[in-house]
Image 1 (cartoon, one colour):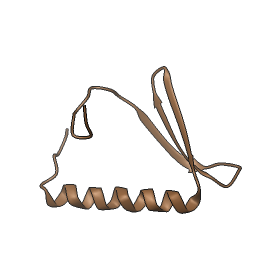
Image 2 (tube, rainbow, N blue to C red):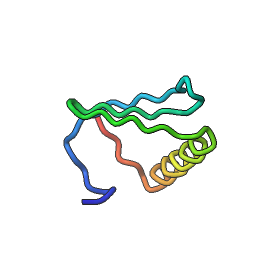
Image 3 (cartoon, rainbow, N blue to C red):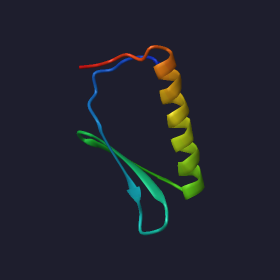
Image 4 (tube, rainbow, N blue to C red):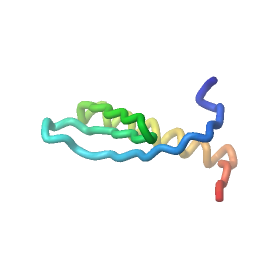
Length: 66
């Protein structure tokens, strides 16, 4: 199982600041909840990685789901 393996799992992602000055990514997948806190600088790096991956996916022809 890798990053390219599709799965039929639904999850919600929420992103926001915490009262401790961190950035929280909160994943809710039914009975599973995963809070992940990052320093602001780490969150910026993650955002840049997401943007780069999105651009690479677009250049590769990106799958369009409906």
